[in-house]
Length: 495
Ligand SMILES: Cc1cc2nc3c(=O)[nH]c(=O)nc-3n(C[C@H](O)[C@H](O)[C@H](O)COP(=O)(O)OP(=O)(O)OC[C@H]3O[C@@H](n4cnc5c(N)ncnc54)[C@H](O)[C@@H]3O)c2cc1C
Ligand SMILES: *[C@@H]1O[C@H](CO)[C@@H](O)[C@H](O)[C@H]1NC(C)=O
Ligand SMILES: *[C@@H]1O[C@H](CO)[C@@H](O)[C@H](O)[C@H]1NC(C)=O
Ligand SMILES: *[C@@H]1O[C@H](CO)[C@@H](O)[C@H](O)[C@H]1NC(C)=O
Image (cartoon, rainbow, N blue to C red; front, side, top):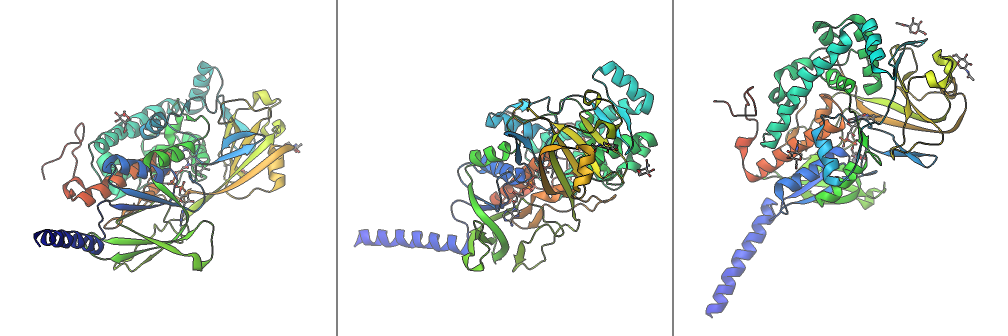
């Protein structure tokens, strides 16, 4: 009799706890649904595992391939990076990821000379001999060529070290603007004027801006120096030496992080996210078409406590529907920029560039004239680090080039591959920065792309979102949106 009572009591407790968990949707382990297995989604899974330990179940939905905009392309048996290529030596998350995953960094990815082509001739090229390069730079741009390095170091890279410190201490921010403010309020100011106006104001010459800065914006973003100053300035960090990429291809980073995080990849296309329980904490449902199915009858769904959108929720970029939310879930209003990457195996037309031999041709060109059909022309090195038997050139353009245009650059080719990328936002001169937080426990990592699109930015956004999700889940609200002082480290100010 007595035993039965105990059993009955136990049952009541158990049954209650089961039904409670059902009502709240909060099982022992929180369930996280991530949409997108690019570097954003993969690094979010990695950081979430770091924060929650074993006490989290992570699903990552991927409709195409793990890696997203980091993808390899094969030509004559050699792989090249088809999308995101260059990583900066100050990109500490990317460096750490390669270390953790046992990957090797190639610190000499595109060696050799850089040239600027104005549509008719090479107006400038660096030389293999650095003394000569400096002399040439000084001759054409005065002190600007030197000052830009110092400027980027002081105004961009130094403040960024602060970001790594406060993220390490666990500070998280609801909006992109608050995150930037915590790095340095000047970052927000930079995002409110064009890079042209920013650098003019900082004393750089028109010639430097129209050639060097414009050329850099064209190769990096397919856009002009009228894009906002923050993305412009961040991408000028490419003037630093020590740029690198991953031996074997950059896509191995997201692939490795997914494995390391123990997240489960769910192959399929997410069509909708809905709020199934308004309660605190809320419960979300993700609807998806498994595999490559387009048949509505195959529709599946799963419930989550935390949802992370790790793909651009921008104008025309996403067809994910948000249903049953009390407030509207807004997309970022900006469009995405089409960058076409053509990989051509063959010999370049030296006459076109006004030189007499391939040897005197710079390895990488950027162009400065908007009426030139291509933004850049760059000799490629296989990601294996080996030398290919035949040279491959990469042409970036803002629309699909026609055969005759490409033939001007490389008259005869043995192979050609063209990849169309919805690559990065179309940047306005002054930007309204979006929020990471879409709903109580629903986030958008790619909000950070409107500040600047780069692999490291994705990792920074992913770290911030993982922290936000963790603190909300564990009720540590004091860790979110704290105001940091400008002093060293990230100390809490008196409120
Ligand atoms: C041509 C090019 C050159 C670049 N060069 C550089 C560079 O040199 N250095 C640098 O740092 N950055 C560079 N970038 C930018 C960099 O590649 C991106 O910022 C970064 O890879 C973005 O990663 P992500 O995970 O945020 O997005 P993505 O890589 O786009 O990942 C999103 C993923 O979500 C998936 N997905 C989307 N919708 C759904 C859905 N409904 N259901 C399921 N899955 C879905 C997609 O298939 C994709 O795999 C470049 C980009 C391009 C295109
Ligand atoms: C990189 O890894 C090292 C060693 O684990 C760690 O001390 C450091 O904080 C990491 N850096 C960042 C930016 O997370
Ligand atoms: C090379 O470029 C020059 C100059 O634009 C052009 O006249 C010539 O036709 C090109 N050569 C080939 C083989 O296409
Ligand atoms: C750009 O190229 C066009 C066509 O070649 C030329 O007419 C124009 O003068 C060039 N503009 C500049 C600023 O060089």
